[in-house]
Amino acid sequence: MLQVISRRLMFGFIAVVAASMVVFVLTRLSGDPAVLMMPVDATIMEIDAFRERMGWNDPWVVQYGRFVWSALQGDFGTSLRHSQPAFAMVMDHMPATLQLAFTAMLFAIVVSVPLGIITAARRGTWIDGLGQLFATFGQSVPNFWLAIMLIAFLAVEHRLLPVAGRGTVLHLVLPSLTIAVGVIAIVMRLTRTSMLEVITEDYIRTARGKGLPEWRILIKHAARNIMIPVVTIIGLRFGYILGSAVVVETVFAWPGVGYFTLQAIRNADYPIVQAAVFVLAVCIILINLLVDLLYAALDPRIRMEL
Amino acid sequence: MSLDTAPAPQPTLVGRSGRDRWRSLRLLARNPQGIIGLVLVVLVVITAVGAPYFGLPSPTKQSLLETFMPPMWAEGGSDAHVLGTDHLGRDVLSRIVYGTRISVMVALGAAIAAAIFGVIMGVMAGYYGGRVDTFIMRVVDVQLAFPLLLLSLAVIAVLGPSITNLIIVMAITSWVTYARLVRGLSLSLRQREFVQASIALGATDWRTIFRHMLPNVYPTIVAIFTFEVARNLLIEAALSFLGLGVQPPTPTWGRMLADGRNYMMIAQWVITYPGMAIMLSVLGINMLGDAIRDIVDVKL
Image 1 (cartoon, rainbow over the protein chains, first blue to last red):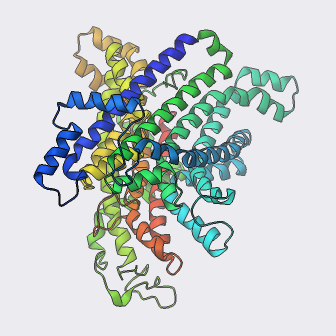
Image 2 (image 1 turned 180 degrees about the horizontal axis):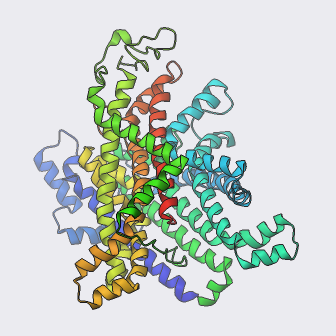
């Protein structure tokens, strides 16, 4: 068990190093950062002095080493626009993104898993057809368009929910609903196909033969055995949501990391972008680690192997 | 990484006779969902290719005397602008039609580039195994840990939002899907008699891979490719919605939505129809993909 965890941690470390490299290269792609960061009317002498002070005349390896060293201490430099530590600013926006992602995920799980089980149990009926149709639409609708439409009808036309921003629980409804739709489609499909596979197993036939009620077979015997693929996809999706919430956050002016980073990208505020990409990558790696550990809790066979 | 416990997918072996090839088409014709999907996809392609030949008004011509004209069937609409005009008096239908070109070009280009790179990587990992496999799969795992959309936004902002850059960035973010699935299939194909026989007969690696392994991976690639094109369409629309797609005056679906957002309460058609264009295109491709997946019987 410990060995597996340490291997996973080791791998997570490699991934973080890779993330740091990409983030480091990102700023150098843009050409000379000194020109970018200095005021437009700075003289060449001033820019040179600035470059020397920031250590940008040193070899790349030295610069990368310095970058990693300060990144390890949570220092990604100072935001060019806000003149505050980039890392702290990104962390300030993390709770909003996490809150949104958790709500969306919770909502998606509550809807999609039962829906997947029901459509599998009623395979070929109109319920199944309707569920499939919903999944296909859910996977095809652009979430920002869905968001605009929801705002237009529920928030502006009928004034049921707030248009944008963060504050009350009501502010959470539309953004999390928008994110959930896409996730529901994917998780529901996977639940359904996994259920269809499990249902043909011998032990399900045995359970039926014993005369157990159908719902009990579905929940106690079948559903437990689809937890591994379902938990996997939920974990992967959660990480994906963190990195892609930027679109929905922007439409709803939700003050999360995505929205904040997009503004930083537009302002060429690279320390913020670096810190954000780094923090999100670490989050995704931690989630994947958590999913791996969950396997052991879900499947005794894996626990033995560990 | 997280999927280590899943059993390796089994490839469906394909024959090389012509009859087999037609069988797939016949199966597709029997699947109503597949037909709807195919029709929608063909429509999208015709729209993209034929855009200049439909006799539409210019998509970029502004006319400040004709702003916010409603669709032709609504009161105040005219048949000069079938789906009405936007805040600058530009023809909405024409912008949707020309926007199709950009979306299709970027989505297809990125999917093709990603498929070529991903399949090569996947086959190499599966065929050579050992260190090659470990290395490629590590790269895949690492990439899956990145917040890809945000990173793409940053890279595009730095490099500039040209069509080529969009295609490159989107291809780099999506090759792992091909690589993972193709690797799984190659691993099991590598153990099959006909591949072992080919190696035993002294065929070069290149010949074994291209003549014996790839043809059997091909159906799966077609299925993934279809879904990836749909996904790319959504990503391209999202990027241009956020202002980092192909730049104005070139019309793009995402940009139309971003512009139209501010006017949705006085002119809902400026956001309704571009959104429907995106959704129907993606829906069509996904339906076709579902049908293909059922026919080649792969689990995705």
